[in-house]
Length: 336
Image: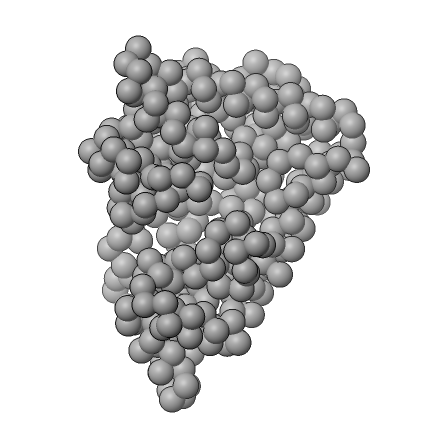
């Protein structure tokens, strides 16, 4: 058995493994090439997160989706580079908005060079992604533009908060569909489309990517509370400390409103307090781990992963389909 890509995805087929590894290597080279500038400082800033590594989840999905057509078609690797560049660009902007100090185990660009450089570097990456897209044709440009609009809309919705009496949980799921689901959906779409797969297969892999993206992000929500740092590779309760209300927290608040129990109200008060205080943070983490809201969030994660898996049913059996099903299983496993 071989392993490739994020989440410990197992690929049992040697041809698929070789194809995927070669594709990911080519994507890595493409990312370094796309982030070069005649100005050395720009190159350093633009390659900061590329060199820090990452799961390369989106490029992997492009490469697996391409297996349903010609995986060696000329547009496959460039489109994988485009989705990862877009993702990286959003991270530069996210870190400025969140005032994050660390990203992928290294100082964030904003912590190192300041907000202005971080924002402009993100813009530089968007520009380079657009440059590559121009060679992939007007349809690819349109698809990427629509996804980018959804991504930005999700970010704005998150910043603005729920409006017009909309339930916070529904609002949050809308935010995730825009911020995360949109680009992962495009990864599946680009891979199949660039490989010349049938339109029905392109549609299936787009819908699969959307649901997998939701499951992937919700698993992160669960992991932030449920895991220890050894499992997740990051400090537990990071979102809590930064005041990010993830799905388990929203379910706690919802339950407190519905039941009015003293225990739930007390937990909500703790959540509303200063969670940079280590003792308070540890207490909130302990209570959340024992709260039914965490299991409820886990079930929603599993549901999205199951929906993603069910989308694959019409696809022909083979190693690529098995690998895509394996990604669903890996996300569920990650959420516990």
